[in-house]
Image (cartoon, rainbow, N blue to C red; front, side):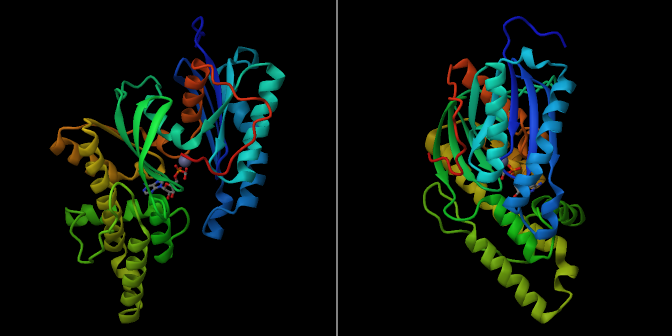
Length: 350
Ligand code: KG4
Ligand code: ZN
């Protein structure tokens, strides 16, 4: 695709957890979006930081090369390099940070330091040739990933205010820990989704399971998932002691019960925030936004409440570099360049 005059060309790099990803974006349109997922963690039941860093080292050069060649962009055509500065695993972040710093220095172009969680929200604004409306500002975003669960008031691409967040586990962790209790491999979220959908297909209504799960007692707009995890663990333990084949016999229903209780909690808080802030537009983002039950129930709730609902395609929900390039696009536009000695941060506050 020929470059239009004056449109910024951004290379985005993501290496915060177990995905090495690179994307090229021109004027907010994705030209390439490459992801190398690290399979090495599955057998350990979770991400092993040391293994993640090594795998990023192996993948980063081929992943960036592929993103550039698929986009048909030469190094000299780049306007800026965006990378995930944090939050994430420090050893994993270091790989992307060092790579981006060196490349920006060699090409003498701006370095753009991106907050991974803000980038998840900006997935709503990524354009890729498919006709999809982007939310107007302000809107509420429910950001649900493996590390974070937040209700965010999005006033503009670079102006976001956190209204509520989790006090313990993130929504993705609640899925993954629940899956582990059932003996499912990491990451368990997509499997819970699949088995809950099977339950829904057989029973017609995913909300109705015979297992009762607690409603977390969290005031205000904050979340808590530890009670759900404990109750689920007790439910499974009790079931197994009565019948060793309990999980096998009730797998789909157990997954539906867990998923429903997580979604109930997420949507109850989102609804409260929408009312308190008097908003009409809501979006979801992050890995858990891939969950088919959450997507469906948000659409249904939105229709009842008269909200406009925004759900990014799956490729932009789970970790990807298109969202990093999107954030870089706005940082470049705002002239917010990072110094070449910028270091990664495991936690970004606020
Ligand atoms: O955003 P993400 O890719 O990485 C982080 O920034 O954390 O989110 C990963 C999380 C994992 O906990 C994974 O189990 C969960 O998202 N996840 C899902 C689904 N797909 C990914 N959880 C429920 N249903 C899904 N379909
Ligand atoms: Zn993420």
